[in-house]
Length: 206
Ligand SMILES: [Fe+2]
Ligand SMILES: [Fe+2]
Image (spheres, rainbow, N blue to C red):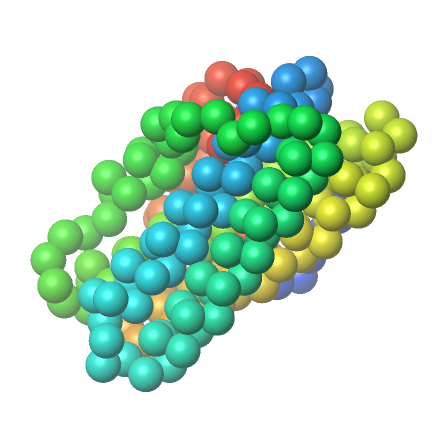
């Protein structure tokens, strides 16, 4: 496993156990159309997941308000990625199965209680955290390739995903007072690191 540091540290993201193994960004850049199409779908799925959580927990006022705002931001990201793709003459491709997210979702405790809600929030947090790291890596690689405008877009987007990580971790703490949120986040972060270490490098966000 690699131990390289994320290129742009963000004090809000404290959960990731490992950095992406070297070489991913070269693969992502080599088929940027595929990477950006996958990224667009990732933003779409983030918006849908936020709305699904809102739908499942209608009486948690703070959660509902935060998910409405998050979904709006993810839809804006989707719109922006599609705009950058359109500028290059690139269409959206079909959504592909997301092994990374699926592996994390499989770790969530089930049922309708606080434990299930806690895991749902913390898995969402970890997906945001990894997105933050990957978008930063992509932004830095784009800058090196002379794609300054797109690089700036990705670095700005990464900052937004770091904020989303914080939203989900804070919600887990406030909505699940009976759970040891820090301990559970640590457990799930270990799983996330193992999943990331095992994934092949592909032209997709994760
Ligand atoms: Fe986003
Ligand atoms: Fe996000």
